[in-house]
Image (cartoon, rainbow, N blue to C red; front, side, top):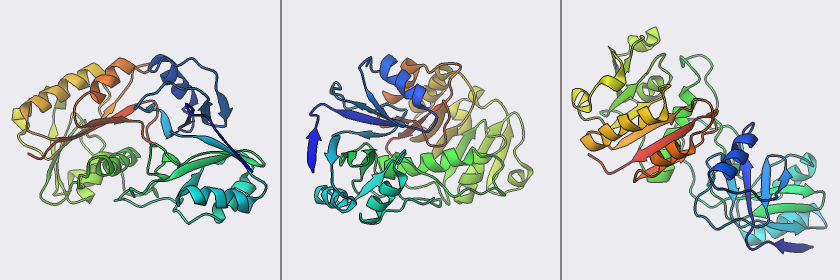
Length: 321
């Protein structure tokens, strides 16, 4: 058995189907043009410049990766347990051996979750088999989630669109990042561009009152929901003062990032809302500079969600009104 640690090493697990986006981000946003080793969706860099930021298109970042050669499955599990308790696998080969190692580690929930979800804050490591008797692992990662992934049990009957999964994930992350409570009874939410109502469906399901604004009506079941007030309008042309104080602001509108940024700035300057979640839609390639402007807003995080495609999501949770 042997350890091999690269002092300046880093590894990034791309979201499924997003490998090219991660590569583009490392090159265009981080200016990284270095040789790397590929292990499925995992990109390992022997030497990586020091930075506190992780790529948005990395599902999970290995912050202190090491290679471990082992003689048996039991030995691999025992060595990981010596380092820390919780470990999650990324499996792309040697699936049976990886499963046997995981069975010998303390249990973690790798199944689909139900919403609302409180994300555990315990540290969780990540490992992958790079050979039959070698693994790449890191006890320190960028996420408290197993391999950085949330997967919800889907409701195929009630939501008017699958977009509801993005909001469920965003609210879960907002609670983990900022300690915020989920929207609920007695709170007022404003959703811009709400049709057909996937996000409104989540908010009303939590018991919140929702002002849903769009040029087109919502799903008829939501239009009849007493917690939902619908207003036919272009939400971006409504001044914050026309809406008044709200506990949460949401937008999944398809628009250029700059237009969304200007709209968000109006709300921030108004002081009428302190908690916001917005999708940053891209027209063509990723506008890294535009996304960074959102990330630079205090008390904010820009993330790529498990349920995003080539868009990003901005989560802002300032102090309470």
